[in-house]
Length: 162
Image (cartoon, rainbow, N blue to C red):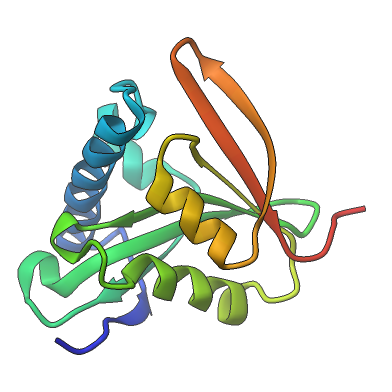
């Protein structure tokens, strides 16, 4: 199957928003299993709450037609200091282990925000995500625990913010 390609996502479009929400729920359910923590905030997020987030969205579009062909997405927040905070990177489970997350992240780092500081967090026990960030040159920072039973790993990439 050909590699997915990247396009901006418009969450004001109902079909796109529903596909993003469905994929996010499925991906976060898998992460919840991996990290042993069912309380991931996005798992309880309604479609309206997701759409209300002040985020920028891009998606990887494949050929299968399901969810409008959306294989995964990346959403980020522009920070006042010029940096970027990746809020979510999700891949539809049917597209796991096909390079979709790598494709999205590489595109973001080279095309959307090159030469800018980027931060991201993931569950410390989410081995696929931790491995991805390390492989793409992110530096692991301190782990932290925002809730009992949950350890998060922080990563940064690009120039430092002064």
